[in-house]
Length: 535
Image (cartoon, rainbow, N blue to C red; front, side, top):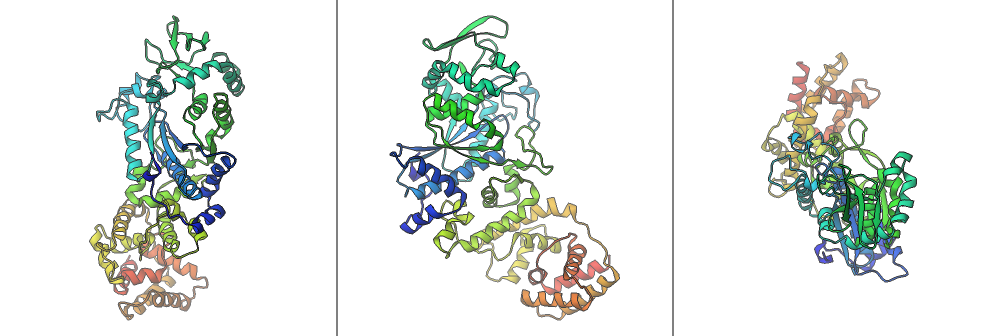
């Protein structure tokens, strides 16, 4: 992969100066790499890496790592004027052992008898013709990375081990065996220390990955000796894919072998981060720079897990919202644990377009601190979005729309210049809004009856709206709604608006009501009020 494979960047002296001053976290992380080589020449390539464990389907945490790392890559490219070669490797740990059957896969019986084998030796339970469970999951990973347009290089642990690409570093590990043990053993309990080895042989009889102590490690011949499952003593070469490394030393081994300069990981790895670094250095490498991010939580506040399939999947998010809104969620507050569930989607969509609306025409430093600069690799598009996603959801509710054309009739009355043809993003939003409303808003709507005072106020509002011009401005409509609330004794106007939302929309919160009426139209709003009063 060469720099030309990454999206082109706008580079100028002003942009470079702003990049060195920007407080945006991708620039802060990228400056670590600039500082790393401030007294030395840059290597032929600066290599970024993300890791993926295909023991389950790719989940949103995997997308998170690739998205955030890509943002840092582009920040680094601007800081170095794109004169330093960069690579982004997405590494799949597909030689790891299959430890348990995931909850969210079909045909569990297909893989139950293969537990303990490398993931690339476990059959594909999806029946889609892939060579293994790992091959299926790797394909899914690459598919969604390609869908988002990431520039990356895919790497398979199985291929690297079996092809001999790790052979040299494994021989070094044999030579440094005791040094590695001295780093790892203090992190283990007494019982585990008795059986631990950084090398995991693959049984030539059963194909299982064996967690057994070493009887002998021969650095000169590059072999290990151990007892197989049946008790027979076996000697295997550590090269050629006969042996893999335990997960803790595997991190450091890989960084040393590939010359990794940067890898981020979740907070669950933070406690072992120094262990990975020490092993990398023992094996002759230079420990990479890191960024530790907080983990995502599901709707119950529990950590998202590939095997459980809890939380929100990439496919689910993309069913209800633009890909860019997911990228925004990844950009925001990476060091804060965030609840990742369906109810966060509307806010992310609207925030994305809000950021996009102000990124152009601002000072350079502000542009580089705008999330959309990072989401779009320095080239945020110009898109007009006259209606928010939240407003579209309320419009679906009020119009009972199940098809795009129904919503477009209201949108066209509100903004005659907007059409599905000249604003395809808005058309996409309309489709997302209909799906999201049907699945997540409608099932939870709870309409209530108006109180006596609220009924009188609603009747007055309907009468006032009925005599207002069809194309009244949203501010004029909002003023009228305010006036009705004040005239009917709502000391706190918030109570009046809550009543409107609960009685007319079946929810506790809602849009700016004047804007809502402007889009729906006074006549249709009056009809909606009268229907609510008949309940």
